[in-house]
Image (cartoon, rainbow, N blue to C red; front, side, top):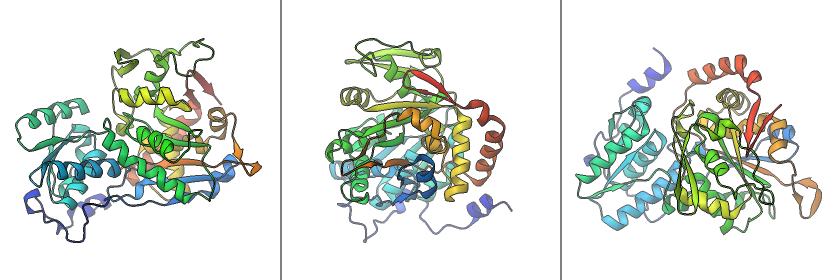
Length: 403
């Protein structure tokens, strides 16, 4: 019997329905539910890039992704505001729903998760936590429509946003506070690399950098070419990376295939279709509030890479660090395995204030994700071996770079 089937066939002692939930007496609902995750210095990545490289291991959260921070905080606030009868509803491509299931199990409240058909393999995981799971529709937008309809018919229902809410960002802010405490005293990163789908993680990192006094830390938003709604949104706004008001030509790959609309003072690009296997980056449009704030803050770089490079990074990370991560997370790690790309992104690497010969460290957010398996890593390795060398390009802001 295959390993995955053996694991799923084992009898579960967990409750099978939300009504059977009993709030665990050891859980203090006033305190954060998320775990404080390690900040690991990667020897091999540090040697490769010529500076200290740290990995923030959000893949070690109980539901296997950073999503647990924002979602669990939102669930706690919903319980405080609506009482124990609250029913939390979510549309998810997988990780948001799993984080919600974990949160509600520990808070003793009811939740229903709507998933698109492409995420059906993750169904047993939230169900094991007592969540009700509804699968339907081909895309995330279909699941979102079904969730909104269910919301209308439920008196105590509250919709859980995947990324576009200040409470979600507040949960993710905690990650930056941890990083500051975990870095050597007095050090701050030259850059933080993170995945961007709709912008929830980015919003939290940006707010966290403000709170800990890191206004000069660069933030690198990482996407795949077929799912880069944030990158396309940024280049559509003239205030992004413009030099003395002169806007460089935008490559067709970033300008075409989107529908632009104005939200407040910013333009938002909505992807006409998603064309990437990085399903966890599957937002078709980013948060307008995050975009507006990041345009004002500055010090953000957008990077989009083809799927084969992300697949290669997943396989290399599994071999190098013995951890499995989703394709979305592998996208963040691409610069760590391609020094030429890293040097293009950070052409000037600032040094420590007390040691001008030593470069400031880099932090990569290993965002994790539950939708990955040994079999998929093997498949990624095979595809990368055939295609990664012929896909050595990336879009950095408005420029296509090759190496």
